[in-house]
Amino acid sequence: MKLVVGLGNPESKYNFTRHNTGFLVLDYYLKVKGLKWSSEPRMGALWAKDGDVIYIKPQEYYNVSGRAVAAYMKYYKIPTSDILVICDDFNLEFGVVRYRASGRAAGNNGLKSIIASIGTEDFPRIRIGTGNDGLRSKLGDTDFVLSKFTPEEKTKLPEILNEVVGRLGQVI
Image 1 (cartoon, rainbow, N blue to C red):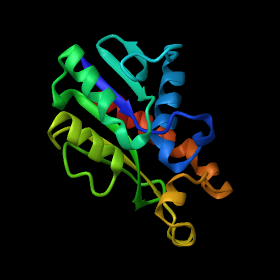
Image 2: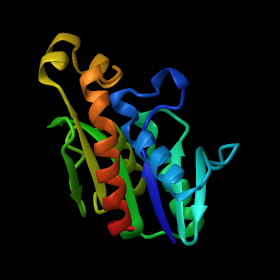
Image 3: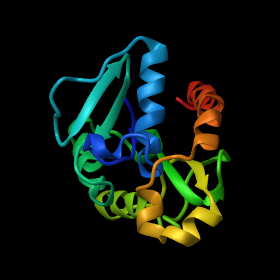
């Protein structure tokens, strides 16, 4: 069994914000695969299943995403090597997609929560660059990650989503 986790915030007001990039990727991926999310959360997350892969979108806030990840890991006895987390990273230039087999949280509170909840940094992750230094300096970090994509960035999202979906197909 494998677990693919998209990070984001559950309320609709956060749709298409930088912090919901993980949700956006999984929504797109499931649409491409013809899958649908559950209508009700289970173990703190919306979920979908395809063969031996479970996809989840934790339904608690980004900074406590680790609780749902730990619950799914424990229930399905999933080793950390079979987890893949998809998240935003404002330290990466917009559109850069970076895969790592393990690593530190590097300031990402969702990754910090997962690391604290499962007790290790040793799990794969895909970080998607949402950086925009000019806007970030005007808004500050918190408001920046909760901000919507600019019109220019929105035009590039389909290309980025397709790149990540291609990588998911290789990694899962």
